[in-house]
Image: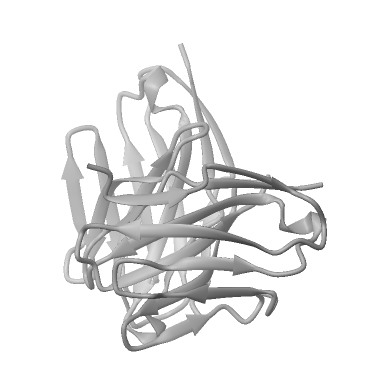
Length: 112
Length: 111
């Protein structure tokens, strides 16, 4: 089955700095890569996603890049704010098995 | 209107008991999932189910079983509960090719 690795597991930045979270996946058939944000005690919620036919996607302060050849994708958050503090998960979805597999999560802390 | 709803939100039970968690989605999605989130926050997929196929993560004990009475529901049954089953369980659903929506989670505590 699919294996998704995510790094770092924790990330602390100063308010206004950028944050980058990286993920790798194993299934070359994977074609959809969402990123989720989970605040304490709440459900994971989608913040951005990218499909395999696109190399980069941006939504205001958040961007995601995908390198299909290397099988890795990254989340970039610019001008971080304290409310960005949360656990972020990358995920990978492949046609085989209909499974949405998550990385181990990154706890992002934005210090004011 | 809640898109994906789970009940109960909290469940405290003794070891050895059998319990169920219910999940319903009103989004018309074709696939539903169950995830287990442990104390380290890792989201582990347990089951994936659409009206054609059930896929089971081979690491899930057979004490866990999904039951789908119809396309909008995927309930989770757990037999002979163990201390290590304590976790937050999330139901999710999606339409092929789109994002997954999560329920609010069920915090299961086995004592």
